Amino acid sequence: MGGSGIKGALVDTAAGALTTKRHRIATPAPGTPDQVAGVVRLIVKHFAWNERMGVALPARVKRGIALTAANIDDSWIGIDASALLSNATGCETAVLNDADAAGLAEMTLGAGRGSGGVALVLTFGTGIGSALFIDGVLVPNTEMGHLELHGGVAEHYAAESARKRDNLNWTQWAGRVQEYLSHTEFIFAPDLIVLGGGVSRPKRTRKYLHLLSTSARLVPAKHQNEAGIIGAACAATKPL
Ligand code: BGC
Image (cartoon, rainbow, N blue to C red; front, side):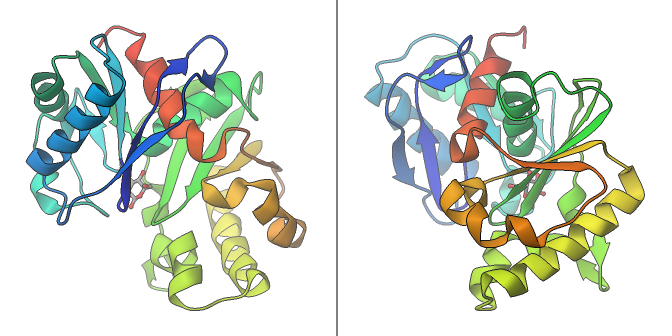
């Protein structure tokens, strides 16, 4: 689930690949839990799905409950998203943070596969999502997009949405991303950084990746905008 669209697909979790096209429905404003549950029901119906599923939310999620709501409606806070979506669809639903989902896809089946040490998967979109791994094991619910930078929230300054909002060219935006990466590296000293989100498409990375310099190995995500869906499906294969 994203701020502008809610997308679903069937996934081959062993191969780490979608087996269908993504079905997308615009996120209804303001995106309350009941509105979103209605859309998720339509997506499940579209695929005639009736088994377990995974849903990635742009929120900190513990035991199925949404604890934050940075780029979604505040009414999500405290909601048992797992119970809500399971009831709305009849499918037992695993719910996790969207960047954690993308991170799981990248570290197990994508650009970070086989990497030990400290790895960070960062997704650039409306906000900046983060997933932290130690020797391939996820430390869930980190919120590195909310680190402080220039006295404000880092994601407001360096997310993909800030590039559009402030009409930045790719070089200008890369300058901001560099500041953000340097700050994040200073705090977490990762060995690997995977850059994810829509900006990890080759068409995009060509415009800015060469401008970035990090101590950690820096690689674009393999699954790009599909990582969240793949990771959510992987989460659904494990006990809730
Ligand atoms: C949210 C995170 C989310 C990220 C990417 C941030 O604003 O706080 O939970 O992972 O955006 O969607």
